[in-house]
Image (cartoon, rainbow, N blue to C red; front, side, top):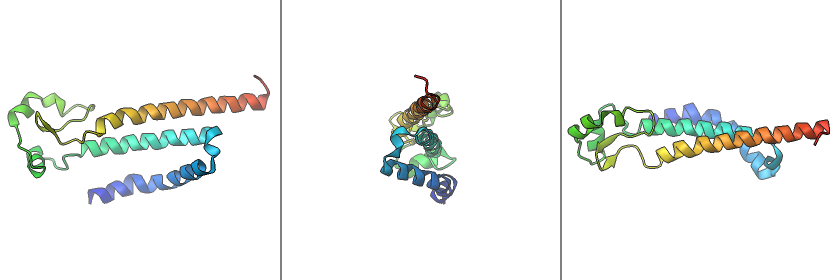
Length: 141
C-alpha cells in the first residue's frame, strides 16, 4: 500500500518530465539547453524529496521496537533514551535499534547530500547557458 501511494504521489507526476528529459538526452540537444539543466535540477530536487521520505519512513511503523524486531534486531531502550536527539533530528536521518543497527538504509544520508548539490550545479549551469544565449542574441561578447 505504501509503495503504491509513493508511486502515485511522485512517480506518476514526474513521468512526463522524465519522458521529455530522456528524449532530449537521447537526441543530444541537452548539451546547449538551459531548460534541460533546469529540468534536471527539478528532477533532482524531487528525487531528494522521495529519498527523504523513504528514509523517514524506513522503520515503516510508529512503534520502533516492533520495527526492530521485524528486522530481526534487538531493541535497546536505554540506548534510545540516551540518544533521543539522534532520531528526532531532521538530518542526518537515523532510527537505531541499538548502537550497531540503523533502520534507515546506509544510502539515504549520502544521497540527501549529493542530490541537492547536483541540483544546484545543474541550476547554475542552466543560468550560465541562458546568459550565454542572451549575450549571443544581443551580439555582445
